[in-house]
Image 1 (cartoon, one colour):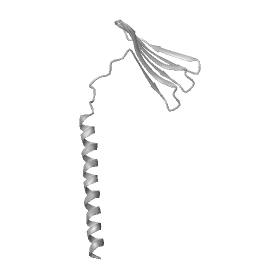
Image 2 (image 1 turned 135 degrees about the horizontal axis):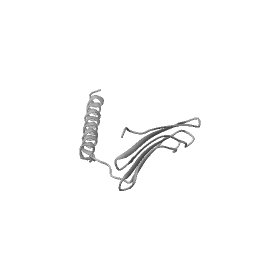
Image 3 (image 1 turned 90 degrees about the horizontal axis):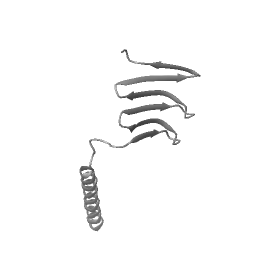
Image 4 (image 1 turned 30 degrees about the vertical axis):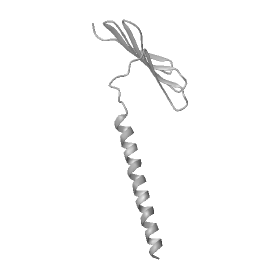
Length: 104
């Protein structure tokens, strides 16, 4: 019985040490993971679970940027465009289109 208790105590010490090492590795890796303050790209695409484009954000030219939202059939439903000092917001639904311009 005494041998079994000592063997059990050793296993508890080994498992405890493994848990401590595992936490040290987990938190050490997490602490060293760099977190970027910004993302720089020319085009950003958000896709759904099926890999279809749902949102795009792009600035292809110096004075032009656009955000577009797509439905599940890849049809553009909402579009926000900024060209220099000018911009507009456009909604499309069932063949209807509503475009909103800022007051001049």
